[in-house]
Image 1 (cartoon, protein in one colour):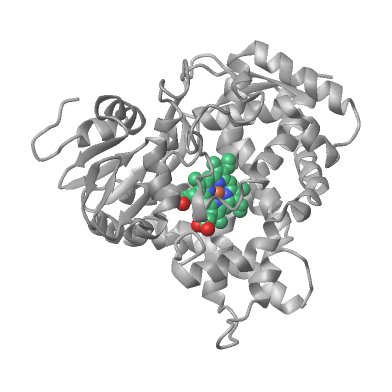
Image 2 (cartoon, protein in one colour; image 1 turned 60 degrees about the horizontal axis):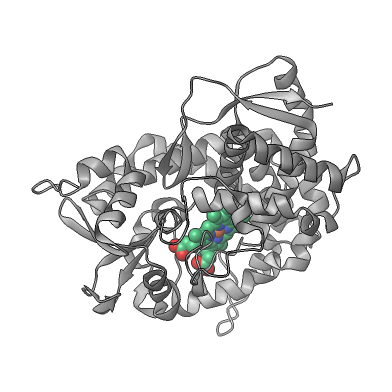
Length: 441
Ligand code: HEM
């Protein structure tokens, strides 16, 4: 690839970040150098290198200044925290993510999905081309609000989703900027960002206030956060700390899952054979009866589809870390203070690991992740101590949504909108996934 004086790979990267990284790894291998203006980043995608960073030497690869990207919106939180503070937070919220508790939410998830159907029936009846990304965001946001905060936000979904969207676009400016501190200052003072943040603050603080006022006990995430006490001082989380944790889970808990679902509908509609097999399974397992928690494990082909979608389009397509001390990864020297980026998107498309990597083929996951692959050849939820907390919830939620929606609708792509992967922090289908909904029954 052509490297420009002063700019490095910035021109190509700004035009097409995803394919620039894929090509860079093809040219340089599992540990590559990515020059972006005055910055020199290291792109690590070999399974051994990724394991080194995320698991075996995780203590040397901290979130550090990489968290300057989400900080203007989320402040200090579970995703950004390190050391003992992070340990405490992670232990504290863990019960809200236990398998047992989440399986108990299947009815709530299913009920929430079905509440959207009357609206979607109208879209189907009027044959309105609809951006499925937006529909999926609406559903997953309503679900996370109910299962983690026991609140109903259906009335203000539009406002919230717009605010999240504006905030994500603003923060995206910081992520790859050659001058991140300057970009961060710019973003913090930008009216669109400030307005988005104010909207989100207003809603989250209202949820906190209203729970405090009601004194109600719910076995949800908000309850755990509100009751938590510092083991040394006995102090509880203040309003701002609560707000940061709550907003982080609101965001992490809806966006990524909605994008994965949108890519799923896109891939199913472009692969009719897979779509037929998936629908046959839903029909055979569910028939016309309500979804039950036992169905999650019975929908095995659906799970294969989800795994394959997350291989091709892992919503969190890159994660970044800062090296504390100098190190070697796969024989390449990493200087102290260097920024390393790890990309499941690139690893998942490495032809040495995944034959015909561009092909969408759920059969790859017939027996789970292929046994002959090394660890960290597949890591859509990251790995090591900072593995995604939603790694059980996300596929569970996706399974319920996919099955219930497929039972009621066929989704067909509207021609004339070529879809490509474009990151806005997370990996979005651009310009959206425009589809017609058709009632199946
Ligand atoms: C398909 C959906 C999802 C994908 C692909 C995904 C992916 C990831 C990845 C790759 C990370 C690690 C980031 C890093 O270390 O830099 C992460 C962290 C995290 N995710 Fe997810 N996620 C998904 C859904 C969810 C859901 C539904 C939740 C629920 C609230 C969630 C909550 C979190 C949290 C709290 C962390 C931070 C964990 C920590 O640092 O201890 N995620 N996610």
